[in-house]
Length: 309
Length: 237
Image 1 (cartoon, rainbow over the protein chains, first blue to last red):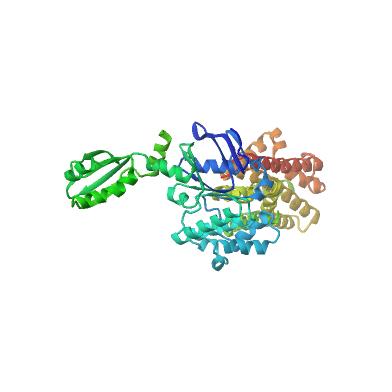
Image 2 (cartoon, rainbow over the protein chains, first blue to last red):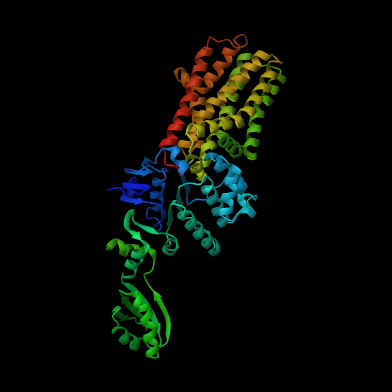
């Protein structure tokens, strides 16, 4: 694989197996400055991949380099990296500020007090900084962990499921913060199993399914690919047979099946058009729609489609 | 290095752990006092074998150190906080050495005070013997600490394996198989005691002071190196 000259993180044919279980299989990609979303269902291999990208885990084969250097067993490189794992890795007996200060000291921050103030302000935790970490909510702990990750002003941020436990206001704040940090030229890798979560913030996406890279690129292209996959939609109305007859005439509908309970099962390859046309059709024929629900909108089925295609 | 040391001190100095250690540490003192009050006062050889060898060096010191030193890395692995340290831009020895020193800082005062009081009472304030016993126990603590710090990093069952080691290896095999003694921490801690006060503790049955000191250096240095190697090679949870 050729290396992107702008690549900060270079993953080359990386595999990792645990006994007979293959967690990551022959994955290659480059990550440059900006926000990259690592997306995949639970158990897809995202965390294993992130752990190999940060040097926490060894690869079974293949190499990972960061700024052109091997990331594994390379402590000086960690001065340039900030890593936040999915686990709540805090010391409950410490106060929030104390934790950030200790992490700053470990990372060799020179003007420690100023750096700690700045990091805590960035995550909007100044009011709670003198409380014990044990007394924080999950969202607060996540934010203080993020402050500890940012305290040494790293050039690369690797964040594994950072929005776990965050409320909507914190999500908005977090999204804005990441965008600000990316605008300053940082390389940010963010993992999630929630498509919408990554879509809001990432410039580029890497989709991992069953340990393999299923797709990569801009989120619009991936979203478009997702919108073209066949969807099953269940429609409950007060006139199912009349609605079925009308639906089969739509270009966006491939097939319609009437269930014994009177619900319609609609197969569509253009769900965006169906979303627009179905209400119009019902209104024109004076049909009342009681319920419209996608049947295979789980992330696993979305990713499964991408892998098959 | 100071940050890791202070962090580990706070992790290890839990109230329940120190309380159990304090009770353990009191046992040889109480038993020595009981032996002195007994009508049939024990000989120096009996006292050495029972209280110093079997109890202090063979049970209390290793048990106390196991409870503390195995947790130096074991707790971090279990809580998944070890990545906070290994993702720091510091050489691995600056993680291992402060953890080892913190384990000694917490474990050695209680064992050393226990040894000092036991010796002071048993030998009626005879300082050379008291110092020899206290120093040898402190060195024993350091040897056990290096072993158990490593064990806490390599195994999630460090306490169980450590207990088996104390009972089977230090307690059983070294007592019955003479050659095995040369690989025993307890034996070399006792040998140090003999070397430091040969007047009170004859040295014929034991290796020399230099050999025992050399063994201590090899054990401590060897296990610290193994711990650093493991920290570099392992998948950090």
